[in-house]
Amino acid sequence: MPTLTQIVAQVLDVIRRPARTPEALESIALLTGAAAFAIGFPVSWLVFGRAHLAIAGAGSIGWYAAVGGAVVAVLAFTAGRLAVRRASEDPAGIAGGRPANLLRWYDLIAIAGAYASIALLGWIGISVLLERSFIGAPVFAFPGAILVGVAFALTAYVAFLGAARLTPMSLSLDLAVFLVVGAFAAMLGSSDPKWWQDNLSSLGQTTNSAAPAFNITLIISGVIVTTIARFATAGLPVDSHAQRRGRTLMRTGLVLVGVFLACVGVFPVNEFFLLHNTVATGMAVVYAVMICALPWLLPSLPRVFFGLGYVYVGVIALLAIFFATGYYNLTAVELIAAVLIFSWIIVFLRTTSAAVQRTGGADAVEPALAESDG
Image (tube, rainbow, N blue to C red; front, side, top):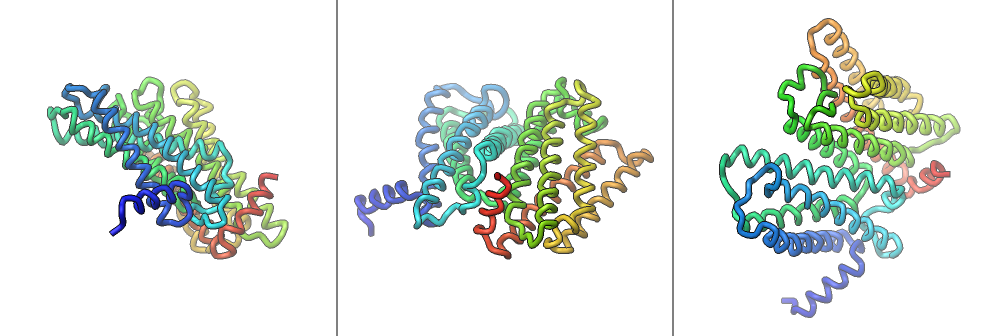
């Protein structure tokens, strides 16, 4: 049985070299979560005092956990990146993966913002669901502080590991979770219960209480897609100038999709009707062009993936016909098209990641990223 001195020595060794091994990385993530609980619990108890708190709403335990969780997510994400950065300077540091260290600072800011938004919107959504499950139930200060501390700990643990293990595969999961959480938070928080009778963009109107959640989700998602554009295509095998140009064109197309997506959130439909519709349509057009040109741009990808893209474009075209004939309303068309486009981007990210691993692993990413930066 290890003594207290041995346990302390092991903890200090993990802190000095947090990403030396996967086990050490898990240990430091647990310590990060424990620190978040150790700080969050007493501070929350002092803030709550002897008050009986509501589960959701302004000034509630859910609101407190959401805002505090967003701050904790940013701090834990930063700690995770610092841990990996130290590991990259240590020959024995193997956890975290080197390609993620080559992400630019603004890429990391966008991903950290996604984690913070997931924590904020996720805890708000959970509190709303709990309030509707426990109607009229108050929360006492002591158990409320424990719950908030647990929320902070879980947020810190997930954000730390997410930052330390950033790969194209994990980015695809981050994007999927962020989009789902953001979309459902906007729908639950909408001040217009009949928003779906107009279009999906009505969630982002400035007159809608859900507009901040919806528009921020689109803006951060757009920035993440531009990050994906470089990160996912950098290590793809190229054997000729034509293939290198195809990779560059594919990256440019994904960047345009990300820019257009962010602009959809920047320009609400009720204030910038023409510009909003232009960037939304442009995103769909660029996506369709990329799908059609994909076999020539990136011929090394599996043919099954090409077929998936053609099916998606065909379904979107069919939805447009349904809308033109009045069978579907615009919300249904936009929602299904958005699910298809973003699911394709996620699958693309995972497919290209598998291709990179097959043709040389993480080492293949470095020269390609250096080439794109130059």
